[in-house]
Image 1 (cartoon, one colour):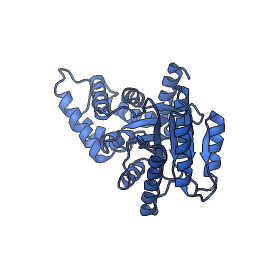
Image 2 (cartoon, one colour):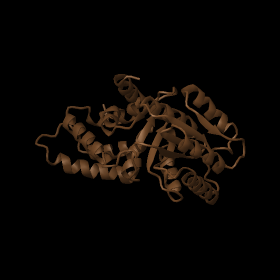
Image 3 (spheres, one colour):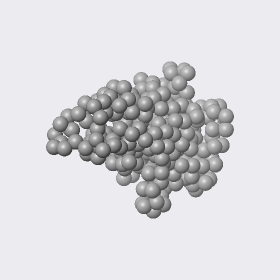
Image 4 (cartoon, one colour):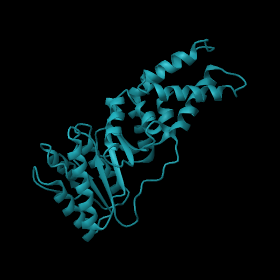
Length: 304
């Protein structure tokens, strides 16, 4: 996909969130002048746009510090200042994705139903389009038709896949994939893991076993662990990330289904509140519909 087309799709992906958030903010900043209660209205607009109260309060405090430096505070200036404040809040100096020059392994985690398996397929296609030779491991062996769904994505994208049988030990699938990564001409292994939170100890033990097995079989420590979240779940996604972080080290977030949600505000909390980078966003249903997250484009897409 051409860069301009991807930029356009990124903007369109936030259409529903934009309608909600921009609509509220334009209602505050759309007049000839600001009314005396505009700060309270602005904070309410942020909170009701699925940004947590604490993060909304921080944005307001930063906004107030900025506007005091303005010689003339018009609605247009106030909107520009707000965008600058939000952009700075989510433009943290995170390291780049750790993609080695030789061989890399990424673990993909998340609860069932958030679009994890679909995201693995798209992510494989993304890195394949960059010239990387990608291998996928279908380690979610407990979900009915889980491996079959990933096999369809592998066929669609032309990416080799290692999968086992239903109820097979996920670590054994990970082992076979890790050996294949080591012995064959592959650059990147994407490991789709089971998504369960009802038994935290079992999840932790299973992921730990998968990691141990991968390291032993390939000699490579997985460089990234990405958690996939469903944008439509709003603040519940933040809760899910916090629950997973109690069990494993999360290095980045992938927000799926952002194109069908009006809750894009959770991205601000994900970065600011959790201090984790949003690495990718799902922007549609096709294999190409995944994009690297850009704070600048996000803010411009969200607030018109």
